[in-house]
Length: 391
Ligand code: COA
Image 1: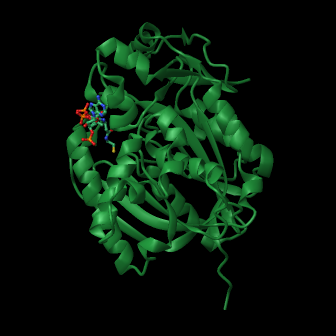
Image 2: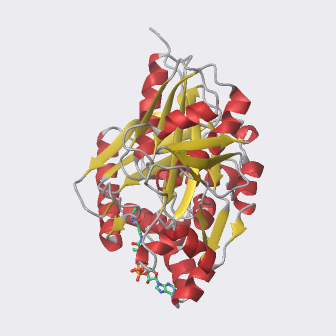
Image 3: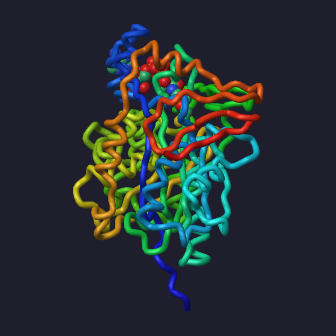
């Protein structure tokens, strides 16, 4: 009988934008009590993309250190998950493949289902590695989250990318087989093709998310999953960090556990460090929670972590991972903290100007102002083509 290797996340690298807007600045502009942002939704600041940053530059910036560490020889598949896609036909992953000089003997594809897409990518990657454990799959989640100015959603914007290298014998987290999955046709958040900014019914979305938590847990249990008590921590999708607390309290209640503040905080508070200051990064959010957890928690060796990935519309999945001995030697804590700290703070006027910017659609030549100090930039639009540049 052939031996089935452990498969999961071998490396994780994140990137975020050139700019940041503190919620205190937004509150001062719109007259909101800043406590609503800092405590009510649990957000301190949000990443704002420069004019020459997009999901491709963020994704390439996140993935480049993975290629530098592991090479690209064994990567035959790149999965790019996003819900802020730049093209209706071509995968954003093909640009990243080119910017990183990946081998032509590879398949590249873009996946979409709101914030859930990267989890689909992770599960598909595991299937591919199970078929041939010598192969590795690069899964990238990259999004720029944009809501209307002066709308309730404005405070829950953000932008980031996370690159995951999925392989056999992973150095960070082994993903276990049972998954609880859930789909329901709801209109809590969507973005028609003709719109830049998403449409959202935020309160409906909270209800839909909680319904999905229940559905996932029920299915996870029926699939032979672990008991709730087994988990050392819970990585939730975090459109705003308070949502993780709402979801967890709902799960505790649904499974007959106490829901007091202490219980809800246990296993959650170390998952919010990046989302709290980056904002909603859509597909990347649940994996930013993982990065935050691994980098901030006491030793998690051998412990089980629950993941709850939710994508409006809606599709959700709950699954478990176990943390590999020695994982701390493979973390990128310093680089990740630098990515957050190096951002330049915007004042409200500069943020508003960037928000209102849209790319010309006339097909002529448009150089893009040089703003980002990152390793990749969107240099121009030419003949309806995006021209990227590596530094
Ligand atoms: N101090 C502390 N807390 C405060 C406060 C203050 N001064 N003022 C309000 N709050 C609390 C509220 O009590 C509420 O907490 P609760 O949810 O625990 O009851 C929270 O802050 C938010 O207030 P609310 O009035 O509901 O805010 P809102 O109508 O502006 O909406 C969102 C908030 C999150 C729903 C909105 O920002 C949104 O729609 N975001 C998009 C979410 C999204 O993208 N969903 C799809 C992906 S999952």
